Image (cartoon, rainbow, N blue to C red; front, side, top):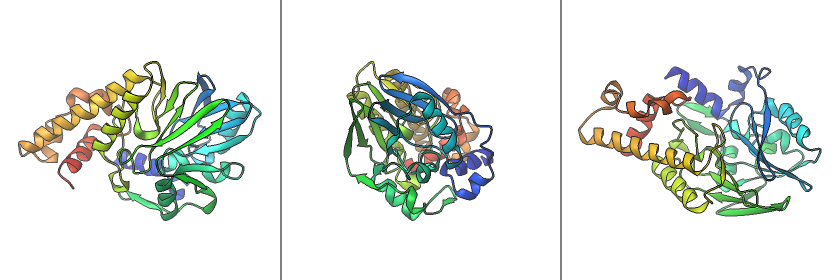
Length: 293
């Protein structure tokens, strides 16, 4: 649990927490996905970019110390400038580079992202102070927004009360690529930030909506993990339903969180607990939501 809390503190990304981490060894790489879209991986959430004659549309920007490496990775693909930055949600491993990249391009996000960045947040005892003014989105939306660039209709659609209350899923419609942000953790248990509007039930409903909407051959960029597809989304939502049912059954039998942990009720999903959210932490998340804590 201590390790999980440490990693969560880095994901939520206060400046003091970041100062204790050495980013000099992090390698930032870009890989083509399809059409105009590339994915950039380093530390933190996966970055999606649309690249073309009109410039770059960038989805999320990881941690602030990685901004020079991200810029270098972009220059290896194109000399064109960044035209827009879209934030999928407010967590620091997706928005830490906002202040740097926001100097030359407008930041776009759901209105709840701006509200939470501006006010500061707390999750699992980890406090994140208010963001600097230059790191705040300058364009916000309620339900959806479309950027028309590089021959793409790049659609940001709000997915309410899933990972947080400000999540957006981004469709690159011509390239047939979807960037899920942390609405999708590929192959691992997700972090559901219930203190900031997140909900396992909402996350499940949002994944169902995406599966019903996108083409069968779409490429899917998760917030964390490797590039996937609709089958990856189906496996993820099946895990959400299966683990929720297992914990709900335990609650109906009168079992405590400690009993559920000791009995390893999620043993059938052990492979999903190999990420930074371990099985015991996921049991707590599910139990607390299902019991209204």
